[in-house]
Length: 166
Image 1 (cartoon, helix red, strand yellow):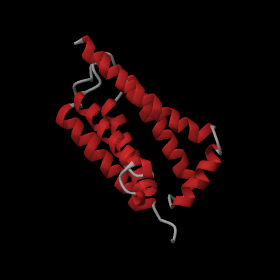
Image 2 (cartoon, helix red, strand yellow):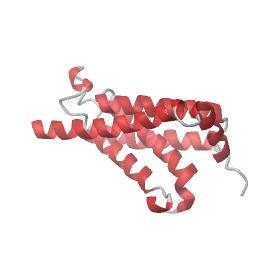
Image 3 (cartoon, one colour):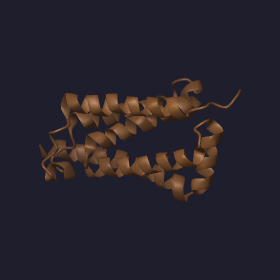
Image 4 (cartoon, one colour):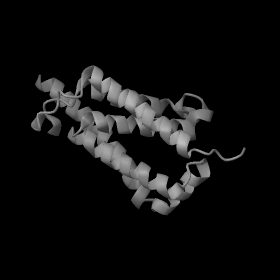
């Protein structure tokens, strides 16, 4: 059982901290939040200032939550919503494969997040320490992270995505 818990911890921390670093970069590196906002405006996620903050905040919070195993299923839902919006707005027109800047990477991150939600965070997590580690896993995890994440992403696209004219 320790190997299982270590594997979950390794995967959660790797996925979570990578996502949190991605959000951190939106705020503090390159063009910072202003540059990120301009980029969001340019791809049709309007208003860019709002979506830059939303995306960066969700990436940081969902990433840290997954890494710590805190509210794991909701963190996973955040991953799914983020990856759906990114895949649709940035990568969809490039096909599937990442070598052509397609949505392959977004897809695999979203699927992995749903897997974490279904498996649960493992014994080495804050959810386990709070004794809520088995409340939202398995099929409930699929519904919350998969279904809820997809609905959240679709709602964001429907409400705010206005693609630029070709």
